[in-house]
Length: 265
Image 1 (cartoon, helix red, strand yellow):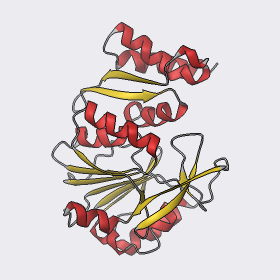
Image 2 (tube, helix red, strand yellow):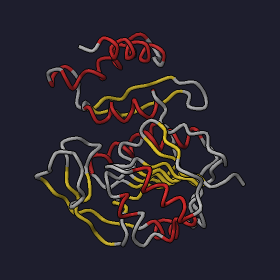
Image 3 (tube, one colour):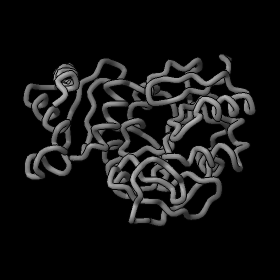
Image 4 (cartoon, rainbow, N blue to C red):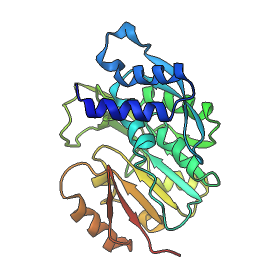
């Protein structure tokens, strides 16, 4: 057992508890995937108490390492708390998963219009529940982001944060199961929402970002800032070229993500 990690988990779980019972429940959830299945339900509604502007939050969490991994990044390490130069009025979340980032963005920027894109049925179910539990008004696109509208095949992973478009090479395990899902482009999303620009774009699409940013991507001119989880090598080289091409400042690296942002206006 890693006692440093255990100490961090104990400290953070106690800090964001709503009650002592809630503290124990949160702690059990963090280690449930290493315990027998009967030890913790497959899904559980759990409350958290964070400093403002996040405040009290409620999430439907699953007994898997995926939800814990993403949740810790968003709320404990606050990997998306990037202090943008310009306050966003429109936010698009590509790869919303169970909705943790979507909730974070709406709480962090309550006046912004928020939309999210997620293709996988299991994640969509949790996403809808978590938006409803936290009274978040966000448009959901049940689809994969793509360079053309239609349908696209996904490789289904054992881990709910690593489903990916088929044919994308990553270091993740090879999937034996595949699923066709609707595909939608960024311009189609903006047209349906009536957006002329995207003030903040979050991209976590398991390697497909290389294609998204290289084909049919003139829409990037309407993006003011974007955080990108880059999968694979040469992230800084690729993103520096992208920044130069579309007029962003040099990319900045934060734990787990890269930020491209236009100069302050």
